[in-house]
Structure formats: C-alpha cells, structure tokens
Length: 220
Length: 217
Image 1 (cartoon, rainbow over the protein chains, first blue to last red):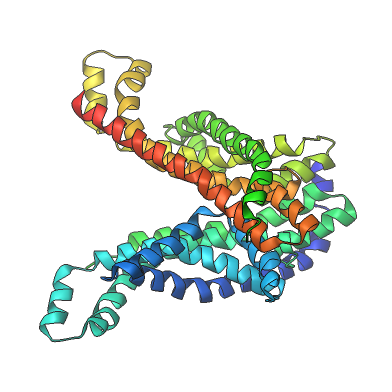
Image 2: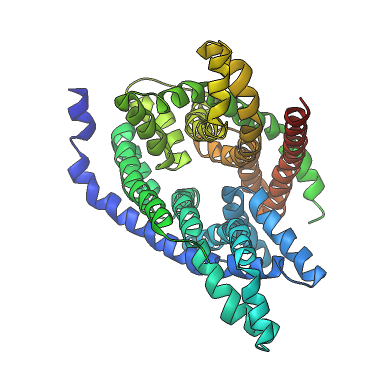
C-alpha cells in the first residue's frame, strides 16, 4: 500500500520534472561553455613561464576550489548587485558553477599539458614554431585528447551541482520537485522521483565515461 | 569591504555547526564504509552488487537531494528529524559511499604477496587485516580521505538549505538584514578558506609521517 501511494502521482508530476531536468541540462551546457575555456586558460596560465601569471592563476584556482559552490552562487546573485551589476538567476548560476568548474578542471588540463611527450615539444621547437604555435598546434590538441575522460567525469559531478541553483530559484529539477512537494505535502514521493531522474542521467554517463577511458588505447 | 572583519566575527557562530556537520558526517562515513567495503569485496556476487548499487546510487544523486529526502521526505511518513540530524545523516550517507571506494583502492594497493605471507606465518583473517593489511593500506587511504574531508567541509554548506545555521546559512540570514551580500559572502568564503587550510596542512603532515613510518619500520 505504502509503495503504491509513493508512486501513484508520478505520471502526473513527470512532465513538470522533465521540464526541470531540461533546465538543469541547459544550465550544464551553459556552465560548460564558460568553465571549459576557463579551465583550459587557467591551466595554460598555471604552466606559464612567467611567475606573476602563474601566481595569479594559483590564487584564482585556490579561491575557486576552497569556497563552496553555494557561497559562490550567493556571492554572484546577492553580492554583484552591490556593484550595480544585476544578473538573472540563470546567469548567476552559470557564472558561479562555471567558475568553480574551471578552477577544478584547471588542474586536470594542467596534468594533460604536462603529459604530452617531451619529444613533441622538442620537435615543434626544431621545426621553428613559436612558443604560441607550439602550444596551440602541438601541445593543446594532444593534451585535450588525454583529459577528455576525467573532464567529462567532472562535468557529471557539476551537473549534480546545478541542483544548488534551487537556492536562487532557478526552475531546475530540484526546484520543481520542491514546489510540488510544498503544495502536495508529498515530499518523499516527489523527491524520490527527482533523485531517480538525477541518477538516470549521472549513472549511465559515468559508466559511459569509464567505458571510454578503458577502451582508449595508449596515450601517446 | 571595511565591514568584512565585523562579518567574520558574526559568522564564527556558524563554525560549530559546520564542524559538527563535516566531522559528524565524516565519522559516520568512516565507520559505515567498512561493512560496505567488506560487501564490495565479497566472493558472493549478490553482496557485491548490493554494495555497488549503494555506492553508485548515492553518487548519482546530488547531496542536497539526499538532505531533502531525509528532512522533508521522511517527514511525509511521520519520521521527523531535526535539520542538524538530517544534515549529519545525509553527509554520513554520502561519505559512506565515497570512503568505501577510497578504502577499496587502499586495500587493492597492498601487494597480494603480503596476504600470502601472512597466511604462511599462520595469521588468521582478522589478524592479517589488522596487523598486515591495514597498516599498509592506511598510507594509501589517508591522502584521498583527507581530500574528501575538505570537499565535505564545502558540501556541508548545502545543510543551510534545510535550515542548519552553519556558516552559509548565517551569511544568508545576515544578508537579509544588512543588504551587503558582497562583503558578507566574501567573508563566508574566507571562513571556508581558513577552515580548509589547516585541514590540508594536517593531511599533508599525516601523509608524510605515515609513509615515513612504513618505510623505516
């Protein structure tokens, strides 16, 4: 009996929750569009030969990793208006999650850059490429290929972090289920459905990434 | 920005709750990860599948959804937890899954020959694990477990969304009174930074000490 009352209204709620999931996916696409270039840029800065650039990147990365995403979210949403910069909830969430994602993945990108075989750099120099060409044409294309599986792993973790946007009322999956729970007092059933939807995206994604990682041949 | 020191002092009241959530959740996880790891390494397939389902299920759902399930969800079936209890249990549930994976990797890092040698000198299973495997596995386990603890410190911020007055929750409350979000959340960020730095330093110290002890007997 209890089992039935738990699931009886799922068909009625599912369309709204799928709308929410779609918003979560859009937010994921948005923070990736910001965070991937940021992570790569920070990695290049972390590997820079110029000390000042390296130190600046270290400060940004450490700040991004030491502060909870939720605090970053509130900082952008409630803090930036103090500087007369008013952003919508979706944009605020994109910036906060994208910044955190960039900080976390910069270390992965940096490891990828370091993993490119030394001979590749030497060959580029022997061909007379400039430092910039060496990075853009030789090192980065190989580094990016190396880091794809771990970066996708971080993307799945941060996909889950989009649920924090609930706190500033972005109508993503968790917000929708909370709203339904508050109006029907059936928090348990609706939150279980939301949890299943999160798992239905995260678990297959993680398995696919593991598969990709194992199937890939030697790195160099 | 000149108000930041004042806000820092007011946010310190929340540190006790952040600490209870973080260490409470971590301790629960450190204990319950042991049986999960045992199941995960069992020779019986159904037990292994059970452990994998738990670990993957927990990791597939955002932490905040677990806290909501425990706090709002269980109330639907008249099982009411305080927000702090729900927060500690939720973080404990999550820690159990992540720490069991860390334990498993630590056990796998101990060479098979060590187990065979322990059996050859006549140690039983318990003694093998306690005297031979655990002292070596702990060296592999400590660094990722410490990194997880620091991550958990930041995850504890989500407990503010079920009403625990920890650092982030207090910062939000303060923002609603003072309308000074930038300075208040900058101060909150500094509090987390100040809490994670000593943890990281302690973890590094412990890691070097343990590996030195293992190397020199």
